[in-house]
Image (cartoon, rainbow, N blue to C red; front, side, top):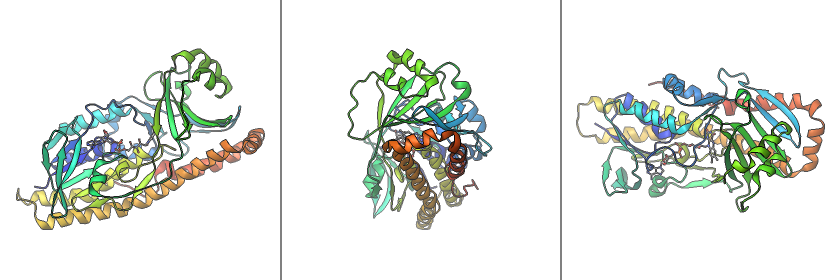
Length: 407
Ligand SMILES: Cc1cc2nc3c(=O)[nH]c(=O)nc-3n(C[C@H](O)[C@H](O)[C@H](O)COP(=O)(O)OP(=O)(O)OC[C@H]3O[C@@H](n4cnc5c(N)ncnc54)[C@H](O)[C@@H]3O)c2cc1C
């Protein structure tokens, strides 16, 4: 009976493990962290990501996890609002902030209810096991080994499995880091939770109310080499945020703690697989945070992987407990190729659209004449820009290719 080991219980690994286990495939999920409260996990789920969870039958599970819809997207140039676009922008669900640690914990808990599921938290994968050019399992940090017929590297953008397999990642030049702040939210912000992007004074940043109560998130873009010495953040933000928020930032200034510095990596592997090994999610294609794509694409990767793997693995399971045959191994490897072929076009386009969004923001940040011109003309041009922008968001919100769970 073929066994699968999945490295990493982020959105990719946790959902794929659950889907496989629910379909009777023996699966071991190995996670380096002891719990899910690591420093930073994104929260933004687009309609496409929410739809992926819906297709997985996880609507009820999502209800048990702290989440909060966005009300609108607002763009501010200097002190003027260029436009506001109200959610759900033509979709059937609004973009929603979902707290990832409880979501991942709930996914693992659901998988634990399935026979054949094994959970190994606090255990990093150190290396791959090989037999005649085929990956046959993993070596753990504590020296134990797990032998399998398929290893799935869902271990994120710094993927150790990718490196061990010699699968190369082509990365785009690094353009920004993000300083991530969490601070008390202004009264009433949660009731009208707009994702505000502000371009002013040579800065670009976004703010929104996160999934957890009273947590305003502020993502502040900096150049990778830019030092982040301690600043008077409260007054710095007060001078830049939309006017109705300035007083709040002055008031909570002292409560603003040092931010997390998050580096942004964008790239794609030319080849996502090797006999016995498949990379998925950020391990195969690390995503930029622009327009919250990475979790959504990870969930869609997991669906496509399940579609291709479940029939092959179930067929082999049906052949009554015998050792995995060479024919099954070959069928698994062919499925890995098909998964990359199906997923790659969406990933390429999403990365291009993210880059396009980022370059528009960067132009506005760099060219004050453009910013000033648009800001002054905002009452006139704002509605038109809003229409064009809303139209252009659709692929990033709804997904680019059709992804349907078929197994
Ligand atoms: C600043 C920033 C903000 C973002 N915000 C959003 C957002 O709002 N919405 C969105 O959709 N995307 C967002 N993203 C992108 C998103 O975080 C990723 O694309 C997404 O998390 C990828 O999921 P994953 O499961 O592939 O990898 P990850 O979420 O990185 O999970 C990988 C898991 O593997 C584990 N692991 C690592 N190495 C090993 C090992 N050797 N052995 C075992 N386990 C291991 C890690 O502990 C981790 O739990 C953001 C990215 C950045 C940089």
